[in-house]
Amino acid sequence: MATSELASPAQPPAPAPMRGNPPALLILFGLLAALVAAFAVGLSAAQALVLLGIPDPGPLTTYGLPAVRAISEIATVITIGSLFFAAFLVPPQRSGVLDVGGYRAVRTAGVAATVWAVTAALMVPLTLSDTSGSPLSEAIRPENLFSALGQVEVALAWAWTTVLALITALLTRLAVRWSWTPYLLLLSFVALMPIALTGHSSSGGSHDMATNSLVLHLGAASVWAGGLFALLAHSMRGGEHTDVAARRFSFVAGLAFVVMAVSGVINAAVRMSFDDLTTTTYGRLLLAKTLALVLLGIFGWAQRRRALPALAADPTSRSALVRFTLAEAFVLAATIGLAVGLGRTPPPPPASVPTIQEVELGYQLDVPPSFVSLFFGQWRFDLIFGTAALVFAAAYAIGLWTLRKRGDSWPAGRSIAWFSGCFVLFVATSSGVGMYSPAMFSVHMGAHMALSMLAPVLLALGGAMTLALRAFKPAGRNAPPGPREWILEFLHSP
Image 1 (cartoon, rainbow, N blue to C red):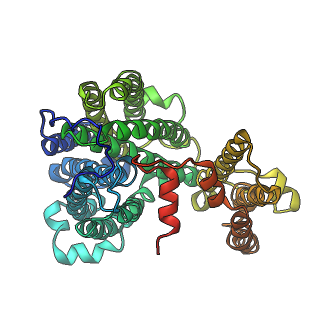
Image 2 (cartoon, rainbow, N blue to C red; image 1 turned 30 degrees about the horizontal axis):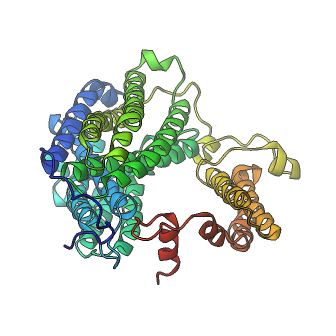
């Protein structure tokens, strides 16, 4: 693989790799997460069996399942983080072929995706054993395995994860150009969804809020943890453009921290009361995870204050970055183990028995539909599409402000169209229209038409891509490509 053509002749030679073995460290992170998960489950395993009313499947399932899942989670975040690293943190060569750092990251993602697929496949019989209360030796028998697979939602989700992770692993072996990496990253996120949409969050009252917050939480955690592992490996190998990668990752990690904190609070709030934090095993594990998140925030702040300035002054000065990143990675691995243990721990029972509407929809519809209730009286913020509408509007406003600051003009009609499209998206998903849509076919069709025919036309008339190309500055000759170059690559792709 050729070295980067982006470096200018005056750039100092790349530093020698630092001491350390990145693959061994990644294995160590997986084992640490597995041990923490098994220990956390040990605190509540007996309570879980009693509440579920199923027999003990044996220690192999009780402790093996969380350990295997923790290793699977580590492999998941390394896959996503490595592909994100190759796509957006380090530049490719001018020809579009991956540079050494990106190539190594994609190959690491391929190995991690293979581990992800193997552990997901192991989770299928372990889940069936755990659900039925039968020993693993019984659940893994073909006649039991295939007959029960379609009856247990979580086991089926793990089967889908196995297939999608295996496809990701195979495609990474073919990727040598940068243009592949964003699509492989998208595929890895798709492989994350089957498990994100099942489990505690997908049932009971407020399951719409719980599921959406979990999707955001897992997505942010995967980019943060996986990107951190990829940055650590790249730094220890002495890869080029470490200063660029660290600066970009610091910005992304800050956003991920905010998303994880907000989504975690929302997910906890719909599951338990404040008093449960100190009186239940679930609450105490949640407090431990919160403490770990605060500690990670402190590490990130310290890295921004010390490691990034040192890299900016001297791109070969990586010792501070490696120290902070290594410590943060160990805490993240332990946090992933805690999260797995938390997922295996029964949450506190609800204060009241959910109604049929709450079980099916996640919330209660107390008044009949009317113009007032659809558009004014009933509002329930949609964490996915409501957030998307606000982010789209805010990003567009920032682009307008950037042009105005430079003295450039922008057609008012385009702005009106874009903000109107964001408003339609917001109302169709977060107002009474969004609440009644799953319950009434007529309202559902109205929301469906607004989302599929009205909002897209308005958003297209807004010319967001043109605005972005005008707002973002070109990277410049011999500089690593940035957002403007990424957008152009996307627009010119088949």
